[in-house]
Image (cartoon, rainbow, N blue to C red; front, side, top):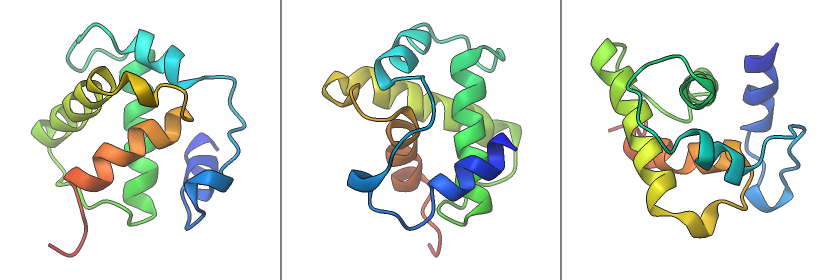
Length: 108
């Protein structure tokens, strides 16, 4: 169900019109992602991979299917969040979506 909701939210809707149904904020996600724990299934990693899966299903990204790509996905997003505190007011799904679309575009 969660993946279905994320896939719907990630459809071709402009980010400025997106309304998050989650109580989770970008700032909360940033705090949860502060400590890099590799692929430990904490809230940060789980959220990132949930959004990544929804992006993959909706063909917004084209990530390779491997453990290395999974670790790379989490690392890319954690680094992006850390480097962009000015974006912590964004919806967390958009905060995760931006670096993944840039890192794993389809049609390369």
